[in-house]
Length: 534
Image (cartoon, rainbow, N blue to C red):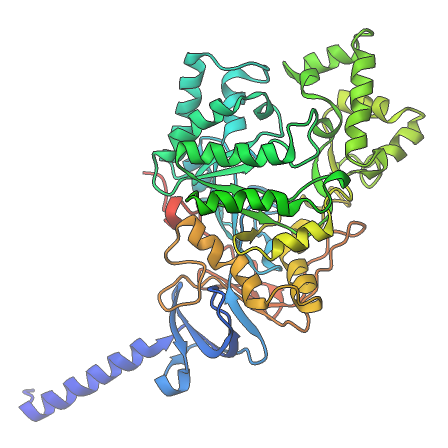
């Protein structure tokens, strides 16, 4: 049948109208929320539409004629970008941690891993594993100085030879080539603590060859190292390593440790501010807890005792001439940390978990140093150091415009009834205590510390903000219900008040319930999504 010109024009117009109507139909429409976009700006009442994995509209949906296949009313709720955990130990490779629900319930949609110097050089294979198995949140990696050193010279307390340094440089280069965000260090930990500053600068030069590279550091001495390197000296060293190599710098869980450093956070922050004013791109991240979590060996045994590895350490434990020195120095280390009563075991061994070192020592009728050595003979143990951070220091740092937010946490699963609550409540605790209860910082300022500030530092152009065209990593909160539930006594409790979370446009939490969608993506440097090995 032939069409006359008039009929053809009518069909053409109708077809175009249908195409426009189809194009205007989004997958999801969030109606009537208080939108905080991540920039620090005040909230605005707006609707937000998602098409695929992107934000397709932000504004008045009714006026714009926006329709969606799924419409969710979010009146009286706050809509923010998904939170970015800038220092995390999320166990995404383990079955119990793959869905990252402890993080999702805080509104976290992206985590940084490979931190504290521990990141391996096989970055691509780990990203591939996440791609194949699925992960609950987006994740990116650093390549670690400690890992490089351990792989080349083990636990030796010495400088590398020229040949070994070349091999360590190759380790870092491989990680960077495969998408790592930069070099991480744990200079407080072994074997990183054995390294001179110049060694780390040399390896950071390798990272600096890649645009946007970051030096992420658990610096040498937050105030409780033994022997003391110096709280301020440690910050200056971290800045120097980035400045001389030419990378950005971020200080992990930045704060001052020990009762002797209560109130001293402003001094450390001033060093960073001075560096920023002379052009160094340096910042920090923090959480709101007063306890740390690490391992018994790092908190009770001086580094020289561990040189050469565990076998050498035990040999020194058995040396009657050396033992009195170890005993004395262990006592001095414990005194810095507030005593054996402040060292709480979070180890999976049931005879240790939930007890302090003092309690274990009393049960075994040993001194605290003797008990520590007896435990270490069977292997290192996870511990918390209670009351090591000062609330006033944390409150000061929370008000600084370059301070991001982190958990520094892992959800170890059910094998450890007592663990650090920070994996379950860090972001929520900051919002509840410092914004909602105390009004110390504004909600937009706090949200920026968790979103846009981190995205800018990471060099992202399509995440971290609520704007049209950005990836739909979105958190929706009911401020009247926001509450961190995890405690030191009962840590395995998820945060409340997180109503919805979208990761790459997919509901990971809906109406307060985890959907078990593994919608996270492995991210390479600059936010590029890893799409598989060739």
